[in-house]
Image (cartoon, rainbow, N blue to C red; front, side, top):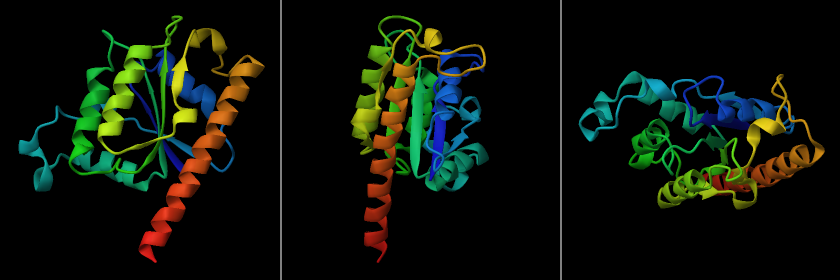
Length: 187
């Protein structure tokens, strides 16, 4: 099962990128988590450069989404919303549909007690309008995120590990269900 992991932050040492790396260590062995590395390379979305003239980086992004069985997004909160670079990546696939019916585990993480709740709400609103299958039990805010990891980017407390193991189990169920539906459509 291939999972495309997208951090909404361009900083390598961001809390969200670190959390993605930390939770990947507690993901089930059946999940291959592939980190998307070109978020900052996507040009500003414009229908004028889409279609047959789509930039190569956009084509690679769409291929990565098509090859993924599910998508794991972890976003910070900037000015009560998701970062522009993450929104831009979503804009690139609104019309082409790579996210349609795709199971998504949507997280926001913050060093604060709020956990990026406004960014999370904004992300969910955008994903739902795109007809994404948001896996609700696996989509939540992570408060005080830095305190839940050590310097080796490992989750440090049992409760957080269990939360993510349960989230990945729910995510896997949604992916299996989606794959079965797709197989039935093709038969």
